[in-house]
Length: 228
Image 1 (spheres, helix red, strand yellow):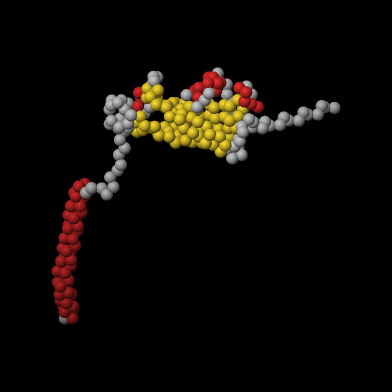
Image 2 (spheres, helix red, strand yellow):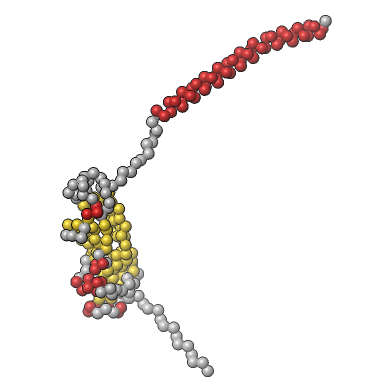
């Protein structure tokens, strides 16, 4: 009899628990279905949401950049005392070592050319002091044609007790354009020192001194004693 009452009690408890479990399972399925619907809705809406930061886009120039060159005749600056080509007669020297450049223009805008010009400079035995102001120019030409503009610049240098110095000059050149069809390849930019005719001829001849000309030469090695 006690077993019968125990079985009936178990059935009663199970009957009271099953509806609750079924209701919990139903609620769980509803929550999962609702979450899936919300996730799908979010995925559908995601493409229409604008990004917080739009990626930058760089537009290309309207055409190629102008040619930038160092004029050979004016690429070096050599002071020679008395005009005689000898190391002992060298005063101040200079050489345009290289140029890096970039340009920008679009539509009918003028051409903007940014340049870094590297100068290597020196002072020889005839240099009067540690400070010297060099002078150089930048010219804009029609390619293989007439000069359109030419501007001069001063380059003050303090050697600070050294025989050589390196200086980088940053310059920006703006070239007007006749029309939107005028590209940078129609122009040339030339750079050179402000040299005398004698200096230009010296450069044309191919003769040159290094920018550290005039430094004290190394002492010759002592002669070895004759063998006995």
